[in-house]
Length: 271
Image (cartoon, rainbow, N blue to C red; front, side, top):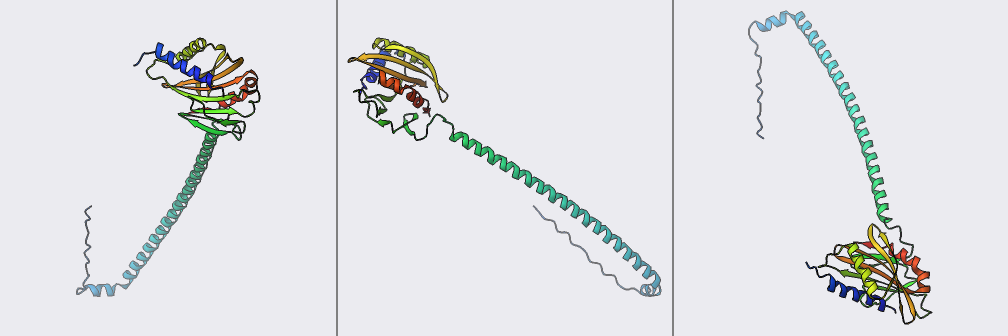
């Protein structure tokens, strides 16, 4: 395993940071109805008996009045029926609108759920998720196997590139920079100085945004024991933590795997 290169970078970076960057710092009322009883008095009964026609006329008037009242009541009943029918129609309309709103809401919820499920479109089918401190990413565990890497949180060795004696590998590190006044660009400048001091040749450096998180993608090389080691790092800063993802390979392995490694880096998600 060629984890020596990573340990060298990390140890040198920590030493250099410590050396150059020490900037620590109801009442209810009842109404009673009075019932009056009409008493027959002398003379009144005779008057009523002798005036039968008046009584009949009065009865007819009362009957007509009752008929008018009944007709009025019928009209009121019809009006109430019409109003009730109108209310029923309005209620049905409101129910239909409510049902339509419910369907729209369900559709929006379904769309939102679909968006959440497909938020990381960089993940390939069959890749497995691995998590570290504040981050996670996906990797094809049919091609990579988990390994212990000194000083790293997670490490993976490639299964198909060790025939030449060099095993390509990926590892991850989270570095606490509290006490140092460093942002992403400040960390980048410090890293570039470290590469130079440790004998690494800077081949390229580019800005790289992974799932909304800005960072840098850096390629360096260093020769050790007659082997030219190629290193591809993606690093970023969140608050006072630096997240470093490193791929190491020889020239042939690097050329074969760099595209896949970039795909792996693009699945990184930060909490």
